[in-house]
Image (cartoon, rainbow, N blue to C red; front, side, top):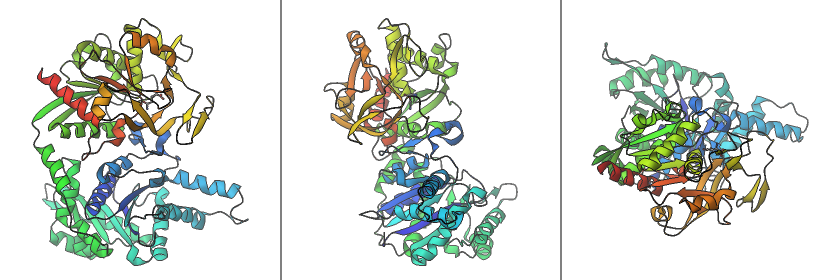
Length: 549
Ligand code: GLN
């Protein structure tokens, strides 16, 4: 903890400037200088975590090994840093307040009036310094404050980071402000006013930025930095950097390096940084810029108009492309629009089909039809979580002669609940059997986080992974119902991945098909551009073969 330095990242002007990607890219650069880096996201909203939020509004819910349901920015952090995140890397106003309120009920504040300052701000400070209070603390912790400076709900977080500079010392804290610098094409010039206003707002809260990162279409000139930003915002002009728009997010670390951002931060914080080694990043970007093939993949899901809802999945497919020197052209297809009549014209021409995870009945029948199409047309098929459940339902209905097959989620009173709610299982993390109160809340009733899985030798899964013991992350309530296992096996479904006690079905596949696999877990959470996930690499490889054939 003593040695950890902190970079606080705030955002100005408007949202969606890419603070998460900026933090991840800066983290990657500092890591490639031999530093131990971690990143934490502080979200000002009141939900305890994003687990109950609509992905269309908030983007995907990213799940960590320890079972935390977190903001999708944590996915960027893991993909760029290649280190696992945990519960401690993401706090919300809701989780902070929740813990203060619990302490108040337990009488821990000894009769005092509990207030935003100091109680909420202290809780935030503990969350921030807690990320460094480990046995092997990081050299640098990047702390991203969600939202935009000026939002009412972000105030306690900004106050907490203001106080931390006093608590930890100036030499351990640095404030980086990401802002928008619009470029007016007609006038042919950049505009600094929004940045000046946003910095003024930040300074009114007692925070003087040390570094300004200007998100812009075209790089800002030195003269602009000096005369329009440095002079008005009291930031040295060599601490002002451009963050230009790029086609490929994995280029961002390279662009930041060209700008000298990491070097400046290392100097300002006196970090023991080595020379940067960017070979990995250069290779990734080079491979992506020079694909030898193009492969067409359709994602049949509920949120066809929101790539953010399938962020990790889209990234993992792209990584599968990197492993096969291919560009993956992804189309999002609305499951609701797939019917027996439309399926052929919607899905023909795709080299591979993915049915992703999801909740709720909307679009489910379309997903089941998509799985049938892929099975019958021998199109590579990858079913993830709900996608696996749909594939099993389809196979049960159309091959195993169980026409009423369904999931308990969609037909609670159904006759054949092929997918059902398991009320007890062995939790390997808790080291005991756990029981689920079926009537309880929506939050906290899912199988969440990393669980071990044993693969059956000689199967597609075992071949793709190249090993037989794996661990993957889960986020679901329902499971395959073992009552139907034998009947499905008898007509050709292979159960190729099971929990170590054999109780839970984790992977199914169809051997009589070029590539048809469904997994109950979410492999997309563990893929990175430097280590494409084996299932995604293998799926894309097969889709590529399908496209050639
Ligand atoms: N709704 C399904 C379940 O809860 C699948 C969840 C998912 O796809 N993440 O089991």
